[in-house]
Image 1: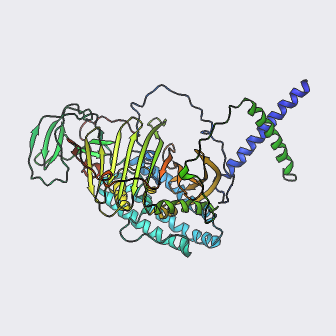
Image 2: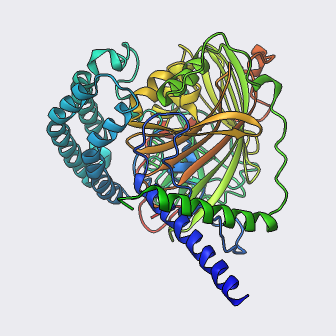
Image 3: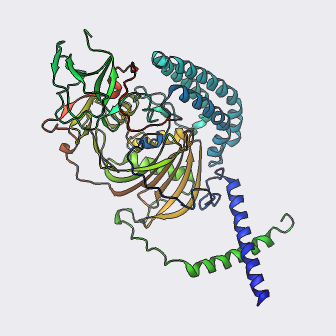
Length: 284
Length: 286
């Protein structure tokens, strides 16, 4: 009996050891598997697999809903952090390894096709140095942008576009041979990888969500062409998004809210209406 | 292991079978999988279904891009990484209606109950929040592709899974994917599906695609691998209808009485705050 129990325990331990070993091997295989149907090169293990969770009692109040995952986009603007300096640092850190891994990753993607693989690998090797150079230039541009973000935003955009055009030209050699589609037709954004990247955090700096604006003064679109007039109105009540009970001024059809030396407009962002700090209205 | 690789394998299988049998004794009865929706039941096909991951992915993308009109409901959850590093999950539902080439309607309800509406009627794209009674509108004739790209890229607005809605979806997914693999055959809500895993430069994605004549996406998981905390966006796509009854009025925005038009945030010239006054924030990340 004792022997049977010992054998059972040994069998269970062995089974666990074998299973763990299998998981480790699967984890080591990672995502590099090819495209064969029914492939099993994926590990079901990992910290999230158990679903274990110590539930806290906090409600959603006070928690941020924002972040890159809230966009549900197929691309990301990297860190999603709100501070420009952090964005720059994180992008620099994140992009280099990504760039250095790109060659291997593309080989994975190409491994799903059995044709032209040798040609692609050769072209990828040729392009690696060019891609690294372009990446370094991009990092430098972003670091410049961190120190004078607003002024250089357009410069960054054009620089990025230029870099991407170079990359696309480079990739056309890589993907040439009828494997990848041609560049988009005129009228489309050239830097396709970015149009849905959810880069909204930088825009929303300083913006404040509106709690309830019941009874607030009427506001019109900034695109209104109403002649410049300045009208004092009753401050909106319940404007919990502002740090004060503001004075309200309407100029050129746009409602301005004043708190001390700061002026705000109401604008529509992700999540609805927000107050954003703006330059003073004409004459202030 | 090197000389006789089959023996440990057999032993492992035996042990695993024993363990599985023991676990099975205490396991709960298997969950009943609901019947597959009639619209997605694999039908006899004229052509063989592809088996390569890339072919399956592009077949789905092309099928969706070539579908003239459709409606679908999306239940999505996503991680919001807090300043402390803690991940908090929020959710939202989307009711999407597409009538190519130039009509789009997306009704979003957040997990806290906030509702938002995005409409495109071929001329104007409008975002409306009923509870606040405010809307913003921008002129963008051309079609869904142009309007959606303008909405996200220029107006800096969010529209989850936007890339699935544009007719250039096949081009987008193909050009962005750096690696792709077939994970397994499985089922999503009773519908047989292909499980694929792809990698782009910034996002790792998994997609479950219905097998059969209508290769529609049934589930998506996006992992923002370069972002702090590597948050995920997880979506279940259900109630696909490829011949919905969509009327023009559903895509045109008629402002309710008292609704105020304001500018999109991206259109407002912002400045840094002066002094110590700071608007109250609703949260955020460092």
